Length: 176
Image (cartoon, rainbow, N blue to C red):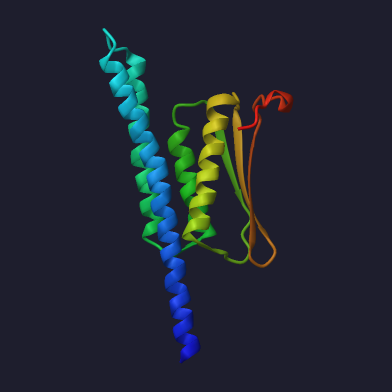
């Protein structure tokens, strides 16, 4: 009975830690975007004339805040997320973000044994994919992006993102 109670306590502690991580993620992501929007609005207020790109910046940041809240809500509703659910979420996001680009996105999923992720793991992987896709679409001039999910042993996964873009010179990268 004591062992079962300890497992229950450990499970609750893990859930609390995961929800705290999500709350920090929301604060950092949404808070930063809202601060940028507020600064943009302040800056626009000091200009003699509003320009289209000023409003476009506010619009893009607003969309990002809304999407960030949806993503956080997706993981907060769960205590565990299967890799298949995560990959489906990544596919949906990929289709949504690439609508205004002339790029083909393909998905390759090699399914073996189901892998379960905790909410922190799922959200971190999702954010990495978001950033990779955003960078590939905005900066690489890629015409094809491939997302691949492979299973690695009993409980591991390998999530790869490849594009045929122009790349960058490693020597020119500034640390930061």
